Amino acid sequence: MKKYILLTLLVTSVAFAQKTTLYCIGDSTMANKKDPEKNPEYGWAQVLQPYFTDNILVVNKAVNGRSTKSFIAEKRWDSIYGQLKKGDYVFIEFGHNDQKIEDPARYTNPHTAYRYNLIKFVKESREKGAIPILLTSIARRNFNEKGVLVPTHGDYPLETRLVAQEYQVPFIDLEYYTELLEQSYGPENSKKLHLHFKAGENLYYDKDKADDTHLSLLGATKIAELVISQIKSSSDKSLQQLQKNIR
View 1 (cartoon, helix red, strand yellow):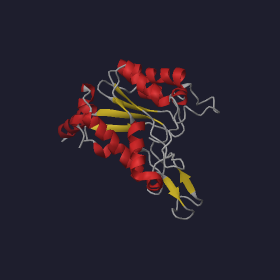
View 2 (cartoon, helix red, strand yellow):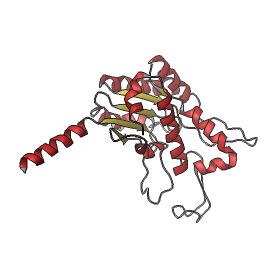
View 3 (cartoon, helix red, strand yellow):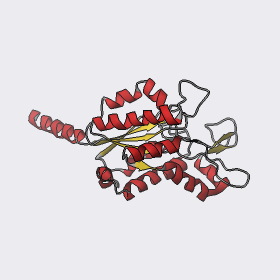
View 4 (cartoon, one colour):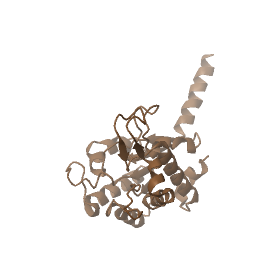
């Protein structure tokens, strides 16, 4: 009996060790939310696990309100770096909080600090044999009076694209694909992708809610589907392990 138990434990341990971990680092648009049974807000990485087989373990380390600067300063990246192993993946999506110019703890110049923080994530992931994947920030629902979706992220997406190109990093232009998503829903229906509620309409909010940045379950799910679609269609050989394990 003891031999059987030990063998079972050994097989379980080996199976767990062989799993590929997909780390997600970023901000509130990506992060897991508290009280998911009641909270209508979701991060897109929060709903990512069901799209993969059991061979891929999604570990969502994105945190509300973080920029590349504060994520590094709080040693959150160090804790991930210490666990990275060969063959793991790292999804990297920042920008929303890097542009908070009134906050020195979070703000980064897109052309200097933001750029070099992305390079740090890329280089240090590769040091461990892990595969970084850069993603531009998701679009905000920001339609003008003419129904034109107006960008809000300045040069941060541009720098993400440039780093991906220069360092030959697998890249998902999430800003572009979420712009198409917002536009396909239109100025009014796109509210469903975000958090728009009248007072009392949702028990989680006792006041009117009109949030065009953060995501409803529908919005998070649609963006997760966009990410999966882009992985599946990529010709980058470093993504083959992920592609093989998409359900």
